[in-house]
Image (cartoon, rainbow, N blue to C red; front, top):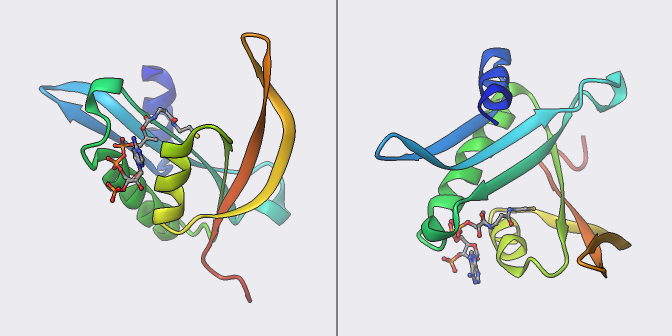
Length: 128
Ligand SMILES: CC(C)(COP(=O)(O)OP(=O)(O)OC[C@H]1O[C@@H](n2cnc3c(N)ncnc32)[C@H](O)[C@@H]1OP(=O)(O)O)[C@@H](O)C(=O)NCCC(=O)NCCS
């Protein structure tokens, strides 16, 4: 994880971590989809917080700052996928401007149970 975060920072990618007493307790990154020129304006968001630090507004602050950094980086579309049962994350993503675009049926299997996955996106220039 450490080398992944350090590589993102060295590449100048939108990447933030939250620190408590010098320890990383959460992260958010938006990695550019640079493999295809036609998708160079797109990035993919990932984030998470250690359980005891959730529900204190840290996730909202992390995602807001990382979106701002992604826009400054030149991205105009941010994609993510989230399990349909992850209501906390879905509420956060909607609160900061993501919209649901699709449903991937039975896209993950956890302990023998299938779950649907939503695709969501934040689009800054929908008519551009
Ligand atoms: C999803 C996650 C990052 C949210 O971070 P957080 O710091 O707990 O969220 P915040 O305290 O900033 O809350 C921001 C908003 O998210 C939503 N939210 C977060 N936790 C919630 C909960 N337990 N119940 C309902 N809504 C919740 C609310 O809309 C909230 O706004 P509000 O405080 O005005 O009601 C955190 O729960 C987490 O790390 N979960 C596990 C990893 C994960 O699911 N990552 C995303 C994978 S796609």
